[in-house]
Amino acid sequence: MKSKIALYVFWILLMVIQVEWIYAQDNSVDVFHERVESGVVVYAENKKLYPVTLQLNLEIENLAPDRAIPLTIVIPSNETLEVLQLTISNKAKAWDYRSKYQYYMGDVNANHNDAFAYRLPLKRGESFRLIQGYGGTFSHQGDLQHSLDFEMEKGTEVYAARDGLVVQLEEDNTRGGPSEEMMDLANYVTIMHSDGTFADYTHLSPQGVVVENGQWVRAGQLIGYSGNTGFSTGPHLHFVVKKTKRGGGFLSIPIKFTTKAGIRSLEEGQTYTGY
Figure 1 (tube, one colour):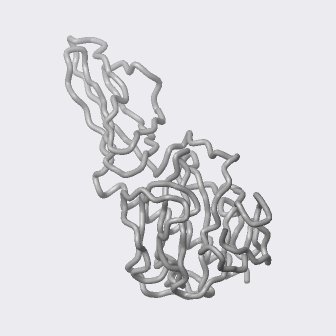
Figure 2: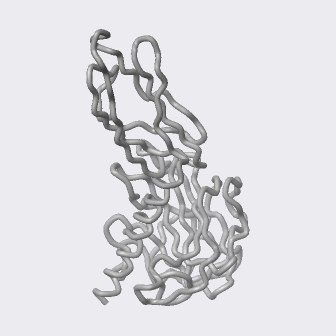
């Protein structure tokens, strides 16, 4: 059991590392400068569907920044922002600067709307057992502790639990199982909410995503079909709402759902009906 937990957690961490490595290579976030009479203006551009948190450091010579460095700044989706200005201290001398930066998905300042009640990501009228809840001993620990696993057969309809923008997806993977080689093979949809948080719907079927990146979806809209892709001990839907963590990665968020019995937190081992 301990080895399975370690593998599962490593798989999640590996997904984060791989995604950040890809982001660093795709040039969709860039830091650049323009020369002005007084010195240099530094800009950051974000071409992604979601905001990114940029951490910037500079090595400067004969230049004075107009704000403290290193600095952390959020760059909204598809925007270019002026980050800072560097003024030449002594125009009779040479000047130079070198930038080092990293960025990660999401707005580090996002605050979850805790008053919001989510829709169950299930088809109305159909019932599913929650096989692992918050703090589940198999894998829902640490940053992942507020995750939910619904037991469901392959090909079961999965619905959006909240309005939002589709910002990431994968549906080309065909393999799954409880082995290390499956760790980065999960199909999934990630939806960004209006408060800057994200929801992941994971382990979907091959070609089992019916939405597209950049598409706005409504709560209760069909987004895909469950499966058993990636590191998984059996067919199920892994659902988590998360927010960006300072330094990269995510923290899972405890949420409540609208059910037939009212607004509730879900309990492991209980069966819930789409409502």
